[in-house]
Image (tube, rainbow, N blue to C red; front, side):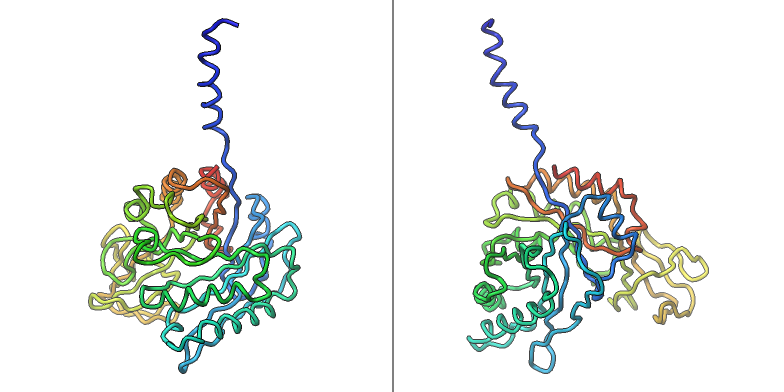
Amino acid sequence: MPIHRYIWLPLLLAFFACHQPRETHRAFYHWKQRYDPAPAEKDALQKLGVRRMYVKCFDVDWQNNNAVPVAVADFRASFPDSTLVVPVVFIMNEVWQRKDSAWPRELAKRTADLLQQVCRNIPASLIPEIQLDCDWTRTSRDAYFAFLRAIRNEPLFQNRQLSATIRLHQVKYANGSGVPPVDKGLLMCYNMGDLRKPGDHNSIIDLPTLESYTGNSRIEDYPLPLDFALPLFEWDVLFRQGRYAGLTRNMPVSNESVFRKTGSLTYSVVKDTAINSVRLHPGDIIRHEDSPAEVLRKAAKHISRQRQPGAPVIIFYHLDPEILNKYDLHELETIYRLFG
């Protein structure tokens, strides 16, 4: 063999090594209380090759100085044998205001016992992971992390991965926020702006904001393996007299008899009316926020360049027939493919 072939061989091997497809796992969140997917939802999951569902089982709320479960899941349908199920519990940060040292252990046991009951009809072999979702702060961090350590010891959590949701600011300021004692994190690549701030901005997803929080190898250097969640939802933010007045949905902002467009996302109410049980007055502002496919593609491309080695789960939030109707499945397939 001529000597120049030996020179090129290492370069070719390096090229093909760098261009091997990287493995990922496709998933969706199911965040509605009732699990009873319509045929269109099942069809979308099948066509997209989704084999993992993150299913909210209940919320832990703070009422009358006690932690109480609310919105407990109602499973009206069984999960396919080919689909892995990740139970998710959403925990309000307010529950950590109770300061006695035994509280995290007590809440861990109560949470695990209820989760065991809610998931009793899901085959154990389909549950590889359990996820806790809490937007902890520096003041609640110690109690929440103690809760995570305690819940690991509960029987339901044995021989399963434990994951926790991670907000963007908790990646950027990992030293101050702390790193939860779990097996892996789920980076929520949405709700990244100030929802309550007036103006013509999208608080669900904004590419410059995402880049500012995750650049400079912050994802690659994060001490936990990270999965990634991208948004598939929209809402309308109501402002009255320049102040945040709540969230609503399905406002017909294209109706020019009621709304006048004032910005790329904002609309001014021009007459008194009631829509979806919401009373609107002249001068009220509606900011319509959504998750445009083009922005999702750019976000996915940015995150895919930052990701750690391994096979992360890529999750869309969330499974809903009205939302799925607003996307071409090819668009979602393209976004999945950007990760490998």
